[in-house]
Length: 174
Image (cartoon, rainbow, N blue to C red; front, side, top):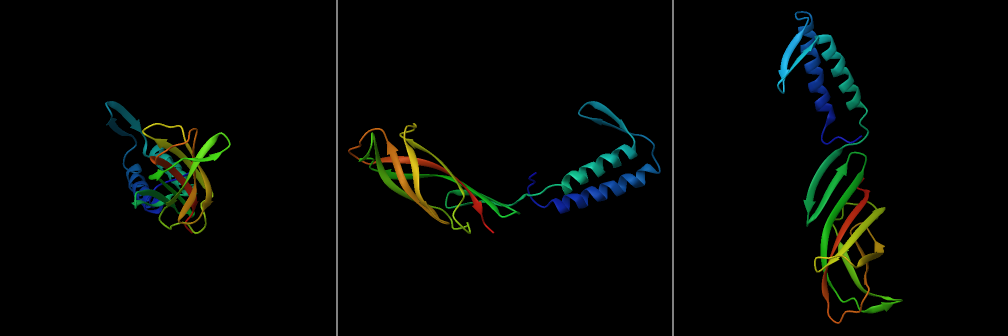
């Protein structure tokens, strides 16, 4: 399970609420309230049971986001476990003209902020040209701060075009 920010602070608030309800339970046998137009009737003991279950669920959280941000157009999420996700769209002027079988290709490189401790172990991409799809990016090498590879197309170009490559990366920051 993932949970953003500090779950210890939330558990502290839950403990405080549980203490207040325990105090109420000695004085009130039934708690009545209106929630979203509907009536809610419960006992303090039932509320305490629900709060205990909520605390148990929070304590089972194995990982959570500790930082999110944008750096040089790259969006990222850092998890407490050390996982790092990063994604962004990059553009490149590429001449797709070198033959490879029935396809043609042109080389291109992209860089990203150097947050990874080793080359990302998950790399996914899609390519758009002129607002449409039809080409693809094949990675050649990947490092902690960038990659190089080729954009392939089904026809030889006579002039460079602007290609947009959507990239998703996953690896570790610690």
